[in-house]
Length: 71
Image (tube, rainbow, N blue to C red; front, side, top):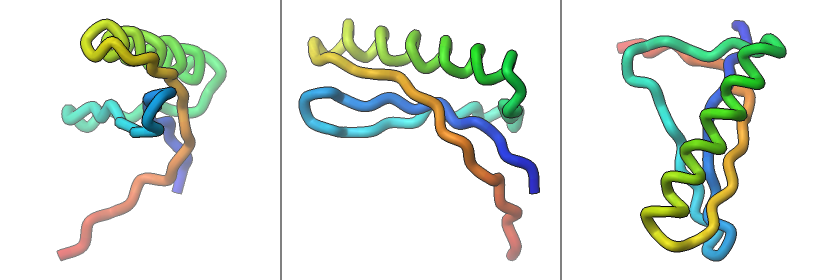
């Protein structure tokens, strides 16, 4: 399977982690361009939560391998 990128943020005070998942099914690849876009999205997501909660949030990106659901 190919690796994909997942946008996440972490609360710098509590350590709580949130992910930003695109429910349309589109996945972010691991090319340099995609990584830069994912990092920008993570920072925007962190800035939005910082403004909303008053806490400081940091954005980051992790690689993962998408799985296949088997019923």
